[in-house]
Length: 357
Ligand SMILES: *Cc1c(COP(=O)(O)O)cnc(C)c1O
Image 1 (cartoon, rainbow, N blue to C red):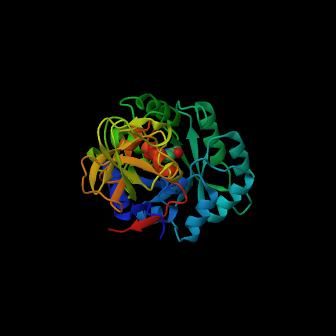
Image 2 (image 1 turned 135 degrees about the vertical axis):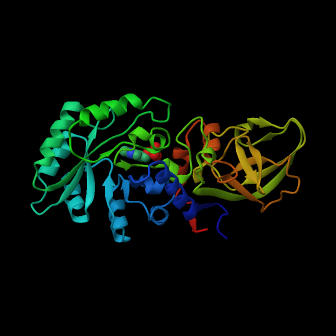
Image 3 (image 1 turned 90 degrees about the horizontal axis):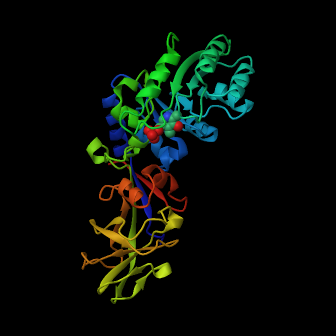
């Protein structure tokens, strides 16, 4: 029998979350962001969940090939652009739109094969200082690309550093609008946080990522209140139950000591499955559909839970590490990280099963 751990991916939840993004930005072109194998949900699952998206956006050229082989004929956008000259040739062959954020990429596009037809998106650095041209270089790149015979279309984009903090994306938005002034081209700015909180940034095309998977981009607004549904349920089972006397410890390092007689459940899930090792005692978890909490250190293949409120729970009882009952964002917050990291970190040894409910 396989180890009981399983990531169940709800195609219906992904579809629903895409419709939430669309409802916030009606009529805009919607790129569903599927980098990192659909934020850890599996590329093929993302393809099914976002079949209605106008395009898919990612950063991996091998994955772009897989999407084309799987029959995706709508646009694909490479968010980091080309990494070398060969990527430009692949982009031409497979009709991948390329972000251009850096002078080397301009040169590669300029040297594209004679028969190439390319759609490119020039990126402005609006203050994040990660990728993108400054204002003058952005406008110069736009003009240079527009004159290249291989280039069929040029669009404009930027990415916000802190659209999740109220008001923080307004200055970068103005910077973008000022830099793009008078340039006749479609525009794309909004990630999940901006889609949900900054309508002025919706422009021509939106780029939802995290919200599509049912997690929140915000610290202070949870996914449920945003109308989102968890796309991933990480589930396992109890494989042992221990009765622990007062004063006894649980797990490596003996960091947790029982103050009273306790029933402790042992779950077949650990950090080698992608569960965060830094999740402290008290991290929410559900057993038999009811919320309880973890105790002690997370080990490689197991973790322990308090069964005090669950006297019936026995080995074989189902456990939800995160999902509908325990939002991934709550586990992330307890472990000092974000939902993005947890969903991307689910280990390859964890099988993913798609559910089209
Ligand atoms: C990852 C990414 C997004 C999606 O961001 P979320 O916060 O997950 O919505 C949008 N645009 C770019 C350029 C990205 O790299």
